[in-house]
Amino acid sequence: MWNSNTELDIEKAGDDATKLVLLGSALKAGIFRALDTEKNLATLKKELKADERALFIVLEALCSMGYIEKSHDMYVIADKSRPLFLLHGEEYVGGYLPHQMNILKSWLLLPDIIRGERPEKEPVPRDIPVFMDAMASRPDSIAEEAVNNILSRAKDAKNVLDLGGGPGKYSKAFVKRGLKAVLFDTGEVIDHVSTEFNLNQIENLSLVKGDFIKDIDLKEKFDIIFLGNICHIYSENNNRKLIKQVCDLLNKNGIIAIEDFVRGRSPHAEIFAVNMLANSEEGNTWSEAQYREWLKDGGFHGIEVIDLAKKGKQLILGFKV
Image 1 (cartoon, rainbow, N blue to C red):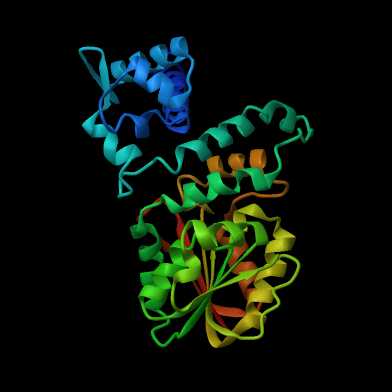
Image 2 (cartoon, helix red, strand yellow):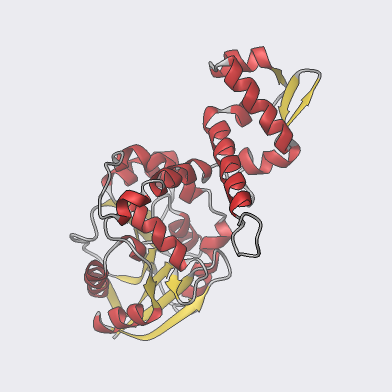
């Protein structure tokens, strides 16, 4: 059973899950950051205000995994760990791990959810910093790939509305290409990202608070409206409503661009739908046929679905009739 020829090795998957939780716990406790320089157990215990037994056990486990090095009772972060947990480059996972741990907590509630129960969860605002850090930690190349594809089909575009843009990865990529961008998100998100990620200091980027499922109250119209990782949060009815709102906000020949996991094309779509089952009230992943129908009914033509190389997602494009 454990090491059969099945696609999932249960024993290895369980081992990987425990290691993931250990790394995330060490990160959240500040161990990797504190070990940027060599320290002994006593110094580290005092600096982190940690329990000595717990700290020793975790440090030794991390040493056995190769993420921390030990010499003469002195601990220091291993070279291979620096790009993962300290350096904010392409390999950085430090922003994503705490979010992944929150996801795992929700997945453990799946037995209740399958029975039709909706267990109590922590209020969303408490998780906004963690979630925004996770989204911000994605490599810039992911946003740039989508933006390059969009602008190759909208060469004369001058402005863009980034719905649910969070930490501004895509907005900044559009601004970098010479467009004016409006990032529209909830009040809690805008309050956090405006200062935490210095979005309020970026020229040609405006921040607007609102709930785009209820109403997008904006005076201007746009050449591009981008929905990145939005449609998987909502039901079919709410996605239809959102797409119709978007059409009304576009200039003639304006383009809608949706980035998401598409069922039947993305290798991650079905599993990601389970994540939405665990972490949203109505979320799911949707098929190409559904997107095409929603866009056609919402007033779009020239619909195109592009497979993105990064993260196994798709880019769905449509032009306003």
